[in-house]
Length: 64
Image 1 (cartoon, helix red, strand yellow):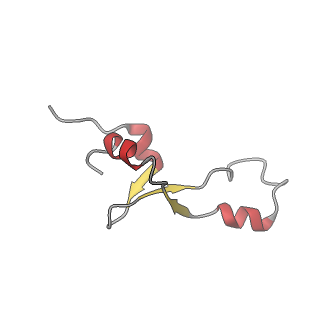
Image 2: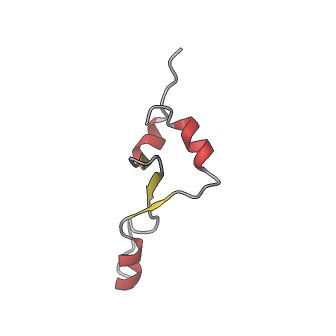
Image 3: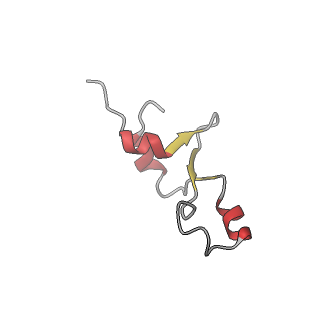
């Protein structure tokens, strides 16, 4: 049988061309007025997922 992709995971994570899994940084959704400009700048963009979670994410994203 075909494996199903976990839809919640597919919305949150993407795979790069080299096979690394990338995520957005947490903490830049709301209550932004109390956070400093440098902190908000640091939270922007994406970062590579920690190696301890990669195996789990590869199971959840079989065709990514």
